[in-house]
Amino acid sequence: MPNKLFKHIPNAGLIFFFVLLTSFFCLFANNFSTSMNAENILAGYSFIAIIALGQMFPITARGIDLSTGSIVALAGMVIYDCMLIFELSGWVSIGLGILAATLAGALNGILIVRFNLQPFVATLATLAGYRGLVYAISGRQLYPELATTPLRDPAVKALNEFYDIGSWTGLDQFFQTPWIPVSFFVLLGVMIALFVLLTLSPYGTALKATGGNYEAARLAGLPVRTITISAYAMSGLLAGIGAVLLVSRLTTSTESLGIGMELTAIAAAVIGGTRLQGGKGNVLGPVLGAFLLGIILVGLTLMGISQFVQQMLTGGILLAAVGYDSFRTRKQA
Image (cartoon, rainbow, N blue to C red; front, side, top):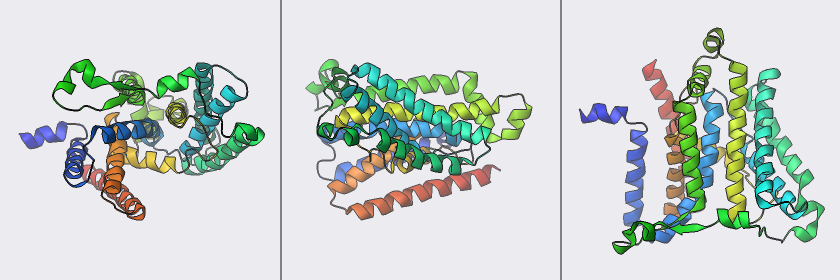
């Protein structure tokens, strides 16, 4: 009975592994179990979790988005330019940055659907193209005197706030509770919205059907081209939201923002159970995958493990996740 229940719990194995690793680092890594460390992990990986949720959409549709990091940089630079060069309000600038990221993601989908390009090739090309566009519109390059000017808009400050949940709930009377960053609340809001979209609306079923069997979904009358474009647009949208949180945390944006972030997002999504063959994904998995990578990197750092070893272990975890996904697919087949 417990074994059957375990199988029916989404991401049960990942949750168990997450708790196991957290317990290990709490016991053997100095200062890992402190409230300050919890605050840093929540603030440092909430935006990555949102970007990983975005990556889940094209992977579920049996594609991939290699341009995520460049889209993050594009959204960040649009926000930077709008605030410091055009002197627009913070919320307007943030809206324009998210819009630019969404359009960039939609363009990826259009290239794949209209020009019949492989997702890997199309998004690899836009990875370079969007990064070049970031340099072309960089306010730091056009106006060097702005390079050291931080973003001081109230919207940026609001998104970088921390709240003492312990005092609200009274838990601080029993033990020290971490301050929860606004970025984590944004993540929770995104998760709820995506859960409703993927679970309680026809779109979620259509997306999984398109990724599971594209031709069968097309013959069934589903608008598979529109669904594919929307999956990449969602990837861009969530990359834009992640960029907003990252820029708010850094209070600036650089041309190198987001480099390599697409690999972290893909790793988090795959570790979270999003099937590379398409057709399967859920909201909780990529978030757990992102924070799992976070506690591993932070825990190893506190234990004094070299950064090179950390990268090797992260790669090993990704290989293990992909291998397990392949094994599970063959077993079900």
